[in-house]
Length: 78
Image (cartoon, rainbow, N blue to C red; front, side, top):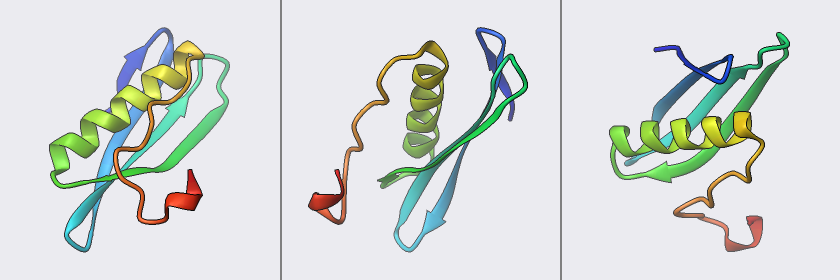
């Protein structure tokens, strides 16, 4: 589902990866530039992954820092 925030189109999504769900988001900014926010974090449920993707996308559009990932398989990656 495409949502709109401050003139930008946001498409949050989640995909299953093993026993977890991975959050993703695509943003089409108001100037027409597409941005992909991929692999935002792993979650136990699809709805939590979707909600986190939406939070990250709105933070990106607002120019705020993205929320921290709740789980990281490789602690050195953050």
